Length: 332
Image (cartoon, one colour):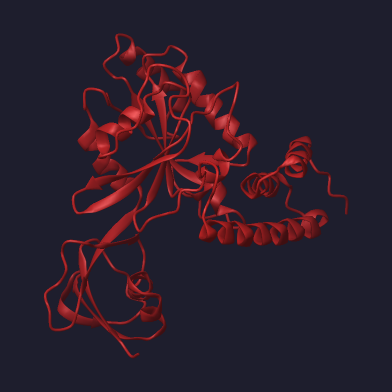
């Protein structure tokens, strides 16, 4: 059966051949895997792409362990916290949002491409943190080759639009189309039907910034008409702090995670540093989050919360809920 590879695949394949760095090669391979049709005629090609990607990722990890020299790093390792990437066209106010929600001090300027390299910062919300990553903008004139792979690595995205710009709808549609051409689909929720490359489906919340501008309400109304119910739109004014507390709360909810507190047998629970896990996680998932060996040697667990009586013994497949206190017993 012929492969019938589309033109976009050939372009990505050429980009892979011309790539000099491991990161650029990985980005091109990811794009090729996202674009290539899925049928029997492409089975061998997809298998070869996966093999090459696995080899390159191994090389990449070895390079990160040795450390980078001579230039900026375009790889932002995930912390224990969920990672959210801020995307958008130039001058939408992404850096201002980072400044308003975290303790970071990004460079802020009313000119394009103020942000030139990825900037990670931790956003506190109640007793947890969310890692925000500000990156250079997507532009019709230029988009950094490493940016799509960084978007894939994030848990979710904030697509920031500028309500002061009359072309804000066009810019939003441009971002969607640009990422789609790289094999990344923005979605209001993660699509569980996506099985081969779920990293290419990115849960996205639209943040409509600069609500204080004179024509903001009119542009916001038009934006809602175009987007409809496809995405949630969250209007804010980052420079004035309007909507920032609400955005932090909504972002935590949007990530669909839960906080689990650990308890050492015979001692009080540690209520200062919860473990953050995806909603639907089980006791065994939390045990592995605490320590990999705990998952391998889990003997029993007790839970406070979950609608159970305090200290009830639960099995490893018990689904934890937000605010649960978990006492892990292991047999080491």
